[in-house]
Amino acid sequence: MSPGVPRAGAGQGAAAAVQLLVTLSFLPSVVEAQVTGVLDDCLCDIDSIDNFNTFKIFPKIKKLQERDYFRYYKVNLKRPCPFWAEDGHCSIKDCHVEPCPESKIPVGIKAGNSNKYSKVANNTKELEDCEQASKLGAINSTLSNQSKEAFIDWARYDDSQDHFCELDDERSPAAQYVDLLLNPERYTGYKGSSAWRVWNSIYEENCFKPRSVYRPLNPLAPSRGESFYTWLEGLCLEKRVFYKLISGLHASINLHLCANYLLEETWGKPSWGPNMKEFKRRFDPVETKGEGPRRLKNLYFLYLIELRALSKVAPYFERSIVDLYTGNVQEDADTKTLLLNIFQDTKSFPMHFDEKSMFAGDKKGAKSLKEEFRLHFKNISRIMDCVGCDKCRLWGKLQTQGLGTALKILFSEKEIQKLPENSPSKGFQLTRQEIVALLNAFGRLSTSIRELQNFKVLLQHSRDTSTV
Image (cartoon, rainbow, N blue to C red; front, side, top):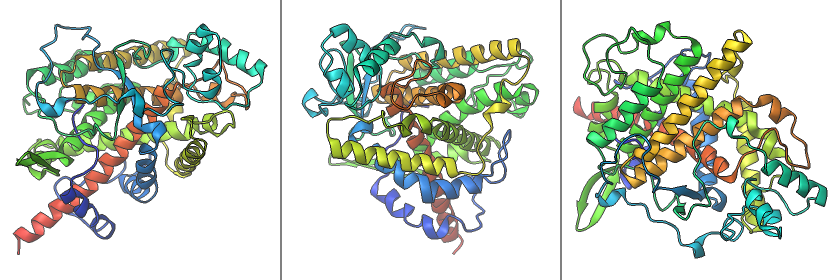
């Protein structure tokens, strides 16, 4: 099991199969891994998500991920594991991450040692102000001096209490830019005790495990025959949601692994594509004793949570002050137009998860539970520094940061509603890293659901040919 492994672009075989999706994906299916119906803890049905993702979101989010602003991600892959002595890094060549040379980074994204990400920050003379200004993901060059001062004031504001993730220090010499398109998430061969310990720590020490449950929560642990999900029934909504988010992320990562698997390597030329055997091992109801479809339902639930966050954060980006700055005026304008178009689609989805149903009890108890929720997730983000495979670590960190940013958004609705049009706000801000992680993490989920449709088609085709 690999915490960050998996895919980016499907192999040629997968791409051909995906083309069958338009005509086959909505036909009645008898595939074992079929997942349908209404999701638990919300009123949304899976078929509606499939339709929405396939025909609206997936094509646009894929294009967005190819834009310069979203393809370069700064990450520190050398931070030590804070919880146990490291087992040593994966020596498999597919675990390697190739950093991006400084010369390849768009001028508006890189900005010397102070990591400035906006045109205003690049023109600021005071070094301290420049360093602080790096916290703003993007603003344009038309700000007044008063607005600039407000921006610097905000940058000094410590918003760590709002973070659901342990963020990398982008000023660290060990932090490097990575071109996500050149380091796709896919199967790397990373597995064994190191990968097991990461996921086991996530499930056992950070999910809200009832005292009455003695068996491991890790779904890969040997089963004793009892229903794995029975223990969830007695938990409150918030704790059920937390587990489903982690399980959904796990399922998504495994889907990427299955969809972009190393099939063979002939004469030094690797062939990547869907591995049906691996998919069935992880998700088939028979091979997983009924757990596979539940894992996939949690993937849909996670998709719904992040979709809701995107619809909620739209006003932040709709302001004229926000300019996804890379230094290329036309590129930046086109990128923002595409992003706003995606936000319009997310707001049009009719069956959003209602986050107001969470933490709705007495104020003191709700506040305490929310803080516990935040700290548990923040701890999981720290565990990602224990992943021994660099590529797995890269994508694990990005996706947990993306989900953490989504949670930050959902719990900041009032602050987002109060955002001023033409100046930064002390109440709510997103760094460029958070923005990049948020959209790429959602892009991974969108790809997972698309790949799931592909596997349904492939399995149906396999069944049809076997009965001829």
